[in-house]
Image (tube, rainbow, N blue to C red; front, side, top):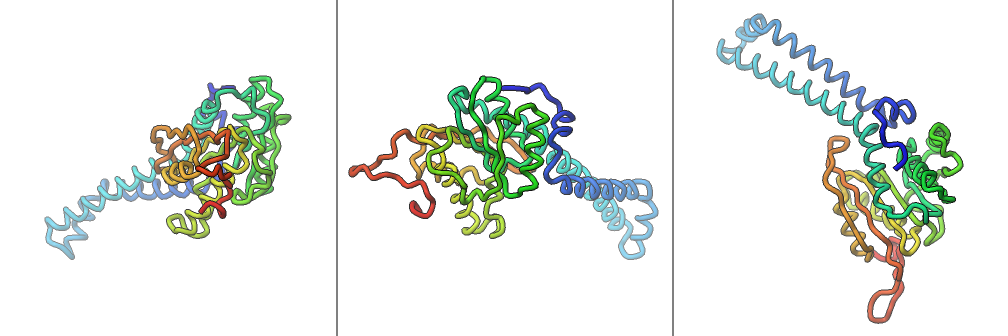
Length: 291
């Protein structure tokens, strides 16, 4: 599977983080709550005395103790959340990318692969490293919303020594700029749940946009091609949709906590034959025509 024996410092040195503001925000608040809980511990008696001006002594001690406990617990939760998000974005992202690669039985036969929402390129470069290891002549395309991201992704490919296996394109996952039945493998890591987020995460419109993105993944896969998606929260929706699209060999991994929520890897194979039903009607993988 290429380079798997890496610690988080090596991964972070190459890829950094997409959203470092969130863990820093959580960490700062954790420090503030830790400081407040320490004040409650050190000055518990004076605090109780102050509260006694407003409350009975027993109630004042309970209020001070309860507030101090909640503050300390909040600090612990904030530290844990910051650590989990950092771990998910760095070490876990690398680990899950290695797991996703194992869903494809024969990388030596892969000529065209696509990473939808390639971001910093952890999964993209993991695929490229696998192609390089197999001595394949294949190539992997990374698609991202932002041109600035694709430029930095190509830089990481150079650091990994796989630049000849990688190309990047700017584009929208809901309208992939590729022809039907083009890729042998399509992968995506913690990205599809962000498609349609402008409509709100739990709205019908957002769900429709996510399914549109999934339909595009299916559309650009060759018959017999493999899709592998690691995503958050909405994987049961993807599985249901893939079944509706008559995908084969649908497999869902065990639950993994990532970014403080539930995540799974789902893999599937596009049928080699597109004909279904008594009249052998050809399926159209485009979202608009099958909903």
